[in-house]
Image (cartoon, rainbow, N blue to C red; front, side, top):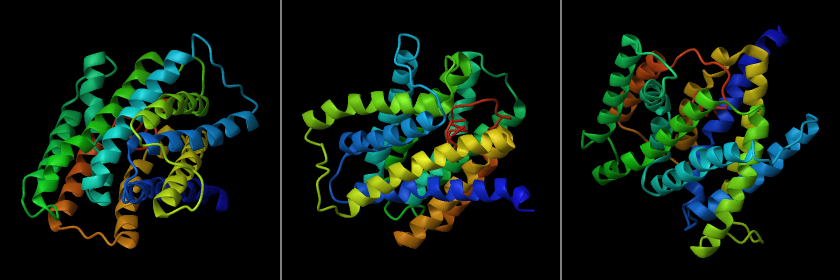
Length: 308
């Protein structure tokens, strides 16, 4: 019985952990920390943890002419660029709204896949794309949907992150991971991404001094990086144990847990328009999402969130 329940329990635990990263991002930017400083430490912690997992699995982490271009693409398109826009949007938008918008990754993935020849046109998935666009419109258009109507201007900024995650997933689907597994790839990308963000953080004055005392933003940043690394390692395990089709359903749980954690710990409340947008986006996501093959994707990009 326990063995049968294990994949479902793991799915819930991974969704809960990943869902917590959006409220934690909101806390991380609450007192002035900004994207390059946050991304440097997020990537550094991820590099240590995922690199450690790679070593424990008895696999190397190559840095050669074959692997470096892959690391660079994943670092920039999968973390640094979407991180800049998502942390910027987190300053202005409720955490729960950010979680809902991240579920739009498959909506961007489909047209990109068509353009790259990774997929074929499907009426069902086109209808899903239309539903997804309707869900975003429900968030943006009604003046009563957000706590402040001016927040609607930041929704396109948050959606840029989803577009980058979709591009990352399509890149992996089109050109593969050059013989590396997902954990190796993300570990290498984290190392390279941290190296890219460090000079940018220093040049812009965004570097975060790691010495104590540590406030709420510092603890939120560390917790988010730890949860992401652990959840991703768990996601890879779940794919190997239960298959990608089962594992990718964590995308729905990530959004739902993100909303729940935001209500519980940040005291956020949402109008009926927001819940309607969530329902419509989930319907579109269910129609658009193909049966996944082997992916790098983190669940929100079912990165794709996978989720990748």
